[in-house]
Image (cartoon, rainbow, N blue to C red):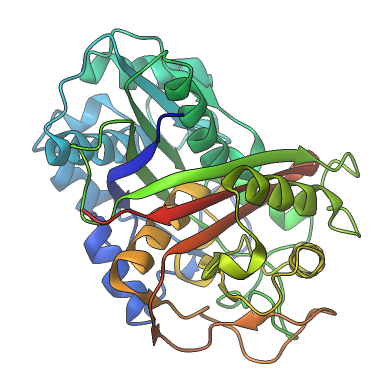
Length: 381
C-alpha cells in the first residue's frame, strides 16, 4: 500500500507564528498560559491567548484584517505558511480538511462586528476555501477534542483511496467566552498553569491556536521533520456525554488497533504525546489505558501547560511538536508535572532528554466518549 506522510507544517499560537519558534519555546519550558479577563465573563481565568495586534500585523501581509475574524486570520496565516514552504500548487487533487470544535463561536457574543451567521462551521470552511481558491469543497471535522488527530487519519484514508494526492489539514479554536463559561460550569478550570498527571492538578487551561500540515503521498515533497503515518484508529467508549470511561476502554482499543495497523508492539514506541488535560478524570482514564496497552514505561508528556487545551486544534499542534521531537531526537518536558497523581505508573518526561527517537504515539480523547490514537514514524529526508 502507498505510504502517507505528514510534511510541511505550521503552528500559530502565542508561543510563536512558526513551528520552529513554538518548538524552541517548548524546549525552553516556556508556557503561554497567563491570567486574563473577558468583558462577557464575571471571573478571571488562565489561558494562552494569541495577541490580536500581533496577529493583525502578520495578517496585513496577506489581506485586510477587517474582513476576517480572528480565527480566520489565524488559520489563513497557518495554511499560507504551509503552502509557501511546500511550493504547493492547489489543484483538483488537493483536499482541504478543517478541524475545529466551535469555529467562529465568538461572533455570537458581540465580541466582533461580524454577522452572526459566521458561527456556522460551513461558513468557516467556505472562507478558507475561497481565500486559497481550493476547487474541492472543504471537509469540516468537528468531533470534540479528537478532531485534529482524526483529521489526519481521515486525510490518510482519502489519499490511500486515491481521492486526493495532497491534503492540507488545518484547524483552529479560540479561548472564547462560550468555551470558557462551559468549562467553568463544569468546575474544570484551573486557577494556575495546569499540571497534567500531577497529584495537585486542579483542571484545565484553554488556549487559542491554529495549526496546519501537508499530508501527502509524494516522497519528493517532504520537510526535514516529515513523518509517515503508519497506523490510526478511533473508538467511542459510549460512557457519558462529558465523562471518560473509568476503564479507559475506548482509548485502549484505539491505541491497540493503531499499533496493530502499524504492525508494531508497545516496545517499539519511543515516545507518547498524551492528551493530558489535567482534569481528575481524563488523566486517570488515560493512565489506565496506557497501562492496559503495555505503555507504562514509555516516555510520555502532555503539552497542555504550554498551550492550554486548544480543543479541536490540540491534536494537530501536539502532533507537529511530536514531529519536532523526532527530528531533534529530543523529548520535551511535560510542563507542570511534579508529584504523580494517577493510580497507574507512567514515565513522565520531567526534563528535556536528548535520545534517539524513531516512532511516537499521539492520543486524544473528548466529550461524547470519542478517542483517537495515531502512530508516526520518522522519515529520513
